[in-house]
Length: 185
Image (cartoon, rainbow, N blue to C red; front, side, top):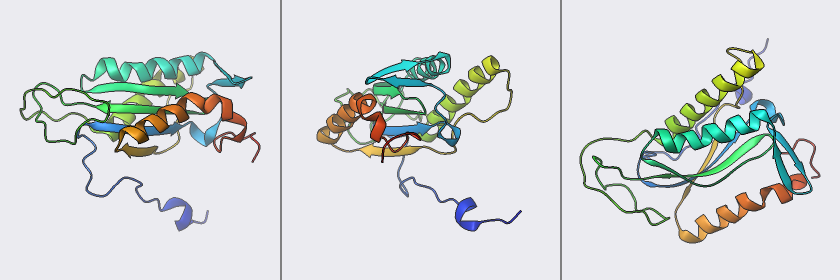
């Protein structure tokens, strides 16, 4: 087998020297392995999740329940990916050194605790959802998600609103979506 350095030598898509544990709003897109449409389907602009899609949705909600510094804003499970806005907030015991929240959260008394950064939150989500899905499919150890994920640091209310609208309208534009392997291009 020939080693293709263009294919296998991946570079990070994260911002250099950016603290992804600081409070703020982050837009993420997480794709299934090989962008397989295994989470449901879109019919007439309506999203119809199957059992795996419901597991993904439940596990996404789990992030907010499990981590007190995480709040989920607009999000949506599509047939082969998930779009979501993650708000990382200052928590009791954490300093208010991060950037101000776009969505207007309040700050709490500072101390030294550090929340889990965005990448580790996404890793926890991927691990938890994959384990549940593999139990159902009786496929222990199988990869379910594509390596890495797309992220965008949301820096203004205008951007936040535009991303919310994009997520909400996503099912209506599924035929043109670049993530749709059967879409019209």
